[in-house]
Image 1 (tube, helix red, strand yellow):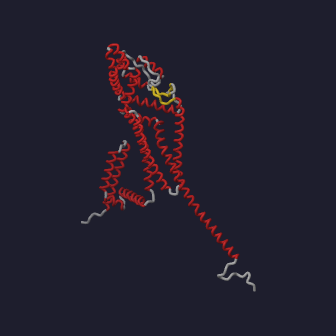
Image 2 (tube, helix red, strand yellow):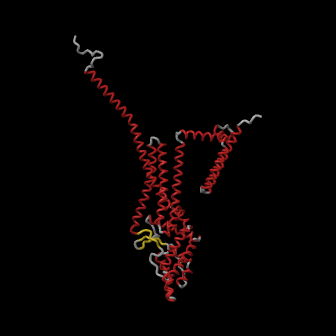
Length: 462
């Protein structure tokens, strides 16, 4: 018989057909393994992409936060009249501000009236050899008038005027930035703010002194914020008998040719501020949604925001020093007072933000699966049950034993912490009462828990 078609003996060489079948099976197995690996790799790739995008959105949130924090503070301080007055209102009571305003106002008056020339002319007519003392007399007289003006600045009437003037200035500034000002006028190529009413009030207070300087009795006309500047200057010229410059009693706020650019810049700032706030909120939400470990992402984001807030505070303090150093030496004290007022407002806002961030950070840590957090939560539950048990007279647990054993230390620690807070913290009446209530409740809870635990202990046998 022929050997064709008979299977190969065991251990022999496989036929060509069986080798092809084995190769096909192996190829199919490799394909299936590749498909399995590909399917298994999809979740890993998705997780990796989610982690990458979570980090990207955390970075975007931090950048948006760094831009929106000072922006929101600036907008609220400038656009909100109450907040603006809360910052600048107390400045009227600052001696440095009073001194600077008195000096500037006196210089403006003496320049406008040309006091030295008047004194020199009078001396030339009566004692020509004494004309050289016109300068010293003017300086002495200017110092006297400046002192009188400073007394006016320290009066309660000036405090009221300061608030009213800043209210008007605030409304003027906002209307100008929004392009709807009816108070600010354009003189030449400058947008100016009229402060003639302030000068007029000082002139009325110094009318007797000025009458002696000018040589005849003068009557200062009434000038209000509604008086047209050119008309007010004409009235003062008639009363003082002098010719005043057209810009007397006004300060340039903007050049008229750049006002449109400033208004466009403010409009762009408001839009970008809104964009950064929205971007911050969306980025935080997306970072938490895409994260594969939301608690860790929240912790990372909170720590990054805390660091950014601290850096912004330090940067603001450094820039405040630079602004003061740029001022003239005689004005640095006044500039320092103004900068401190606005800087204190910014630091207070960032401090509140830091408190919120620290609360979020502590809550995220205490609610986590960390062993110390689990033990702390268990301890809090035990203390709570011990407190409830002490009030209801129920059996108390191990926490009460610990509290009872450390009662004096705990009560003393509460008293020390309370004393330190009251000594160093600046609390309003409301916060003081709330803190006092919490402190009393703490001391009472420790005492009651310890007392309830001691009541459970059996009396010693006699």
